[in-house]
Length: 111
Length: 166
Image 1 (cartoon, rainbow over the protein chains, first blue to last red):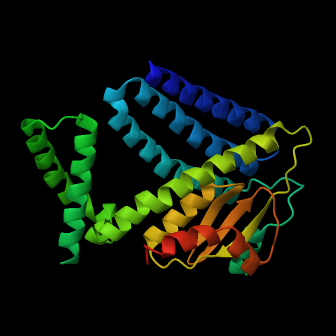
Image 2: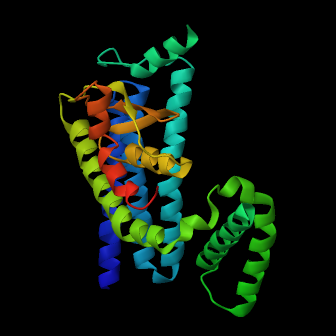
Image 3: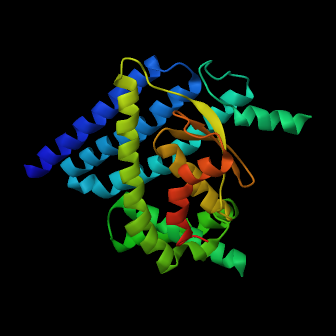
């Protein structure tokens, strides 16, 4: 019974974080800021939900922890790949951005 | 010698994943798992790891689990509260930009860990890694200077990782 309640709490926390991530997707101005909100909140949200499932069903706990580790390792890598691909294919930064050292670096290299 | 160590490391990791996924310690499952890992590792060890058994020294494993991992989780929770604040705030207080930082990590594995940790922590997200330079999208730019930004973004993680990685 206690496990059930703790698991439910983790599930709710995960749900809240994923909701915030989707809200961030709508509210942020450009691809890069959207990646910021979605990567972080979804990683923790998904990990929290999976941990909740693992606590409710202790037989699955080991598998759930393994899935959490996979998410933890692969999510940032995919975010990095998407961000880089977006930059390389010419998606501009939001006009309120203060600096763009990456663009300067690429220009230096081309000259 | 180097590739033997890489091969053994791959076999061990595959076997651990197998045991975790099957979730039993029955001997027939274990033998199947061992056979599968030994065969599969033959084809995959050269892309799976570059450092081999060095990754499994007690110092690395213990420091990674006891010291680095809880720290990473704590930073992730802070990152999420920070992002949540920026998303919910009606004025959307962001000040984004891409900054350049330098990392002191030498090995590829170290750089990967630092880059991944940066992506998961408050307001920063790695766009590209070229040599020892990292380009980071920062949601709230506090400093455009390379030295200062290097202290602020990867600094803490590097201190943490340097103790047991390089």
